[in-house]
Length: 396
Image 1 (cartoon, rainbow, N blue to C red):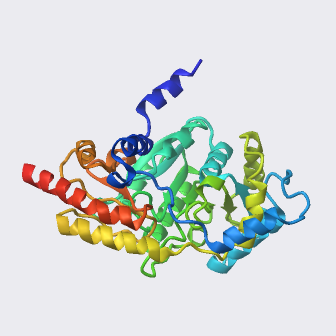
Image 2: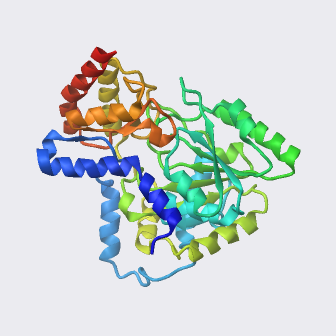
Image 3: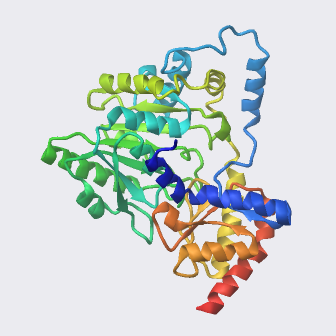
């Protein structure tokens, strides 16, 4: 009954989910306090109190039609508030017509790819990357082209990008702050990238859409700034969600923001709205659209994540690991202490450490740690990391 293509994909599986499920098994066997699960980017902190209060007030209110269908793009008043917020942050005067509410960033990406891709069109992504990108692009007949970043900084390698652009290139997908590295792509790099794309568009008589996947844009440390994609790339859309910024991953609420300067903007917007419907999303969750509309200025406490980042980073460096210090998100991406990152992650299981190999993100020789876990788990994991490091360094 299941398609051969899907069976093949299922057999390769997801390292993130596989390690999470292994963690579930080990918690039952060893006890939760003896298992250190850093596999899943699932915020452990609660949403801001303002979000909870707004949700409670809405549920207990007499507001009519709160749970009914609306325009496939979402409530106009909510979309206007998001557009106004983007205008305030970037200076780009977009309106509610440029906003489409979606079922999270994952739903938004599928809507974008369904709208723009013809069979065989290419989408360039940068490694390391969020592994689900391959499936989202493949879902709609596209072909994923991986362009590597510089290993020492994880910034975009512009020479490699230029080599990878062909007449079939339909889009370039950016994720900044990045999952899994936590790196924010430099504005200077993105400006040079814009020049390359403009040159290639003229060479091939094509248009290339820049898609910026920004679920971690509000989780930024040390006064770093995420450059505005809408300012840099005229042909661009932002895909965002409130899963991380408001700790609402299970509510599946996000949006697409279309640059007002994008080529054939009205046609693209209409296509996005149409695909939001025909992909089966129909519209983003009505209740949480209203919640978001009232809580755009709310934030999770970034200092909680910063404290975890600093503690883990400093301890891992002390043990002999090397790692680019994250500027945002809630991941560390250290270099494995042995060449084979899969073997390293399997060895970590000996100490009940649940990690994800870099191979799953297109970057062998590294591993990902999600510090979206409580501080007690992080503190208690240090002896396990020390034992793992000692065994690896002894074998060198």
